Amino acid sequence: MKSEPQAEVNGFFNIIKPVGITSHDVVARVRKLTAIKQVGHAGTLDPLASGVMVVAVGKACRLLRFLSDDKAYLAEILLGVQTETDDMEGAVIESKPVPETLTEAQIMSELQKFSGDISQIPPIYSAIHVKGERLYNLARSGADLAALGIEIPTRQVTINQISLVDIALPVVTARIDCSKGTYIRSIARDLGAALGFGGTLKSLVRERSGTFNIDEAQSFEQLAELKALGREHLLAAMCPVEKALPLSQIVCNQEQISKFCMGQKVSMPLPEKSNLSESEFVLIRRDNAEQSSILVGQINSLDLEQNLCGISPEVVFSNAKTS
Image (cartoon, rainbow, N blue to C red; front, side):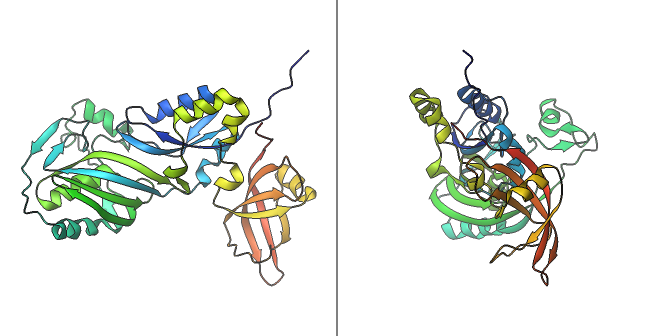
């Protein structure tokens, strides 16, 4: 007798990445735990960093771009040391003693200069592309970037909040809430340079990724225990799509859903108490089904006088029960 096919599984895991493994390793472990081939993540963490990694499984991988992409970190910065990689993984370039006379006020004064919209120079050992090559590959090859006419491009990032948590010289601990693409290693390096002693990142914990917090994250050991209780227990640990996506939600009837599924634009009354704007992405839900389709649409027209909006489908897929 043939067994019934397993229901489609789509969702997000909030995982605590341990120190010492790569983001690719995290994806591989989730793939093995869930026996689902389609797995992706919402942002890498260096091997020496730990903390929150949001991992999508199934067709939820297509929705990663809609997740909130701001991050929050707890960073230990070692003053008086400069390394090749701007963290403890690289060889030491220079070291200087840090005087005990360095005050909290001096550190705070320089730290606050990183607040707001800032321009960063990424570490030379980073994954950005320069002239078609990963920067870390150029660095590892020993190439003389200046001789090759290669200049590391600056990037604009936003530091929403940066605060001093602890001082135990030569280590300074800071909490940093920032936009996607921020290099905390660059902040460690630049803070040390501003203070006159050099600096490097000693340790890093990602405490939040978008709406996913470390307090709610699970270790691989915890996930393995859930799997031992049964596959349904493991899948119950996933965050469902409709909870994870920070999008306004619009409830539609079956006729409207069918049009979306055929790639058609739908004109419909504006939801009550909506604050929608043109070009905004929205999560579209059925009004009655247990097994709903997950649809992401984009507002492409608003008629406030007629109280109507036009929505075009952006992502459409079936979201069957996760059991």
